[in-house]
Length: 254
Image (cartoon, rainbow, N blue to C red; front, side, top):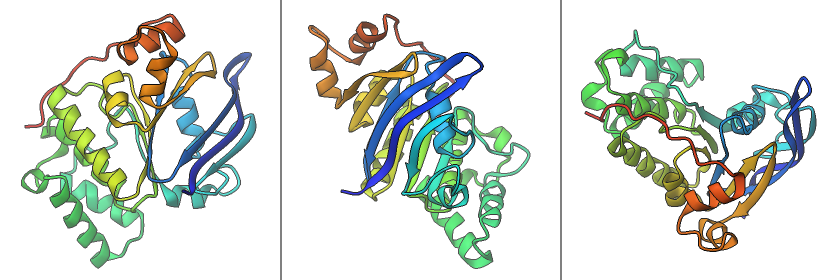
């Protein structure tokens, strides 16, 4: 199995505060890697470095075989990124948002419109595609955001807390999308505050605390590392000394 993400000795500091302190990581293609950690542990910083949005202080990073610092364009052509907050333009309709991304990616009019139609159908967004994004529920905006991320057929997708603020029904709809992506060969790098989400989706999980991985393994392996652990909540509390933060829920898909 080929490697989608390879990291050795990754370091990043803000002033005198070390956010990442020698992180090593390898993610095989076509898998889901879940990154857990308390607020401020460095999860988003790590994603931003891999997505070419932030330069590391030290270490080697390869995304789809490319260096995010020296081969940023090649990395950007290989990835998709969905952050904690949707990147949709709320003044545009869902369809217009999709077409805008296709045009920015220079897909060409015919190919771009075909890809937009394909994704709107796949994400069950056809009926609401003509509505302004501002009128869509949180779940629908998240699905639109994910569809926009996939227009360029990325090999690797970074999902930085993609279901924060969504109700359970919306969250499970996103889970289904993630599982379908992996089934088609896409690699997913997931950060989340929902331990059930990591348990359901991730092939492997790492717990990041104070800039270092304090544990890594499959969900089952992590539970075995903590005697008496019944779920990942118990594992997280034992490893970090803190409960996972609870994010607020938003509205439904409809």
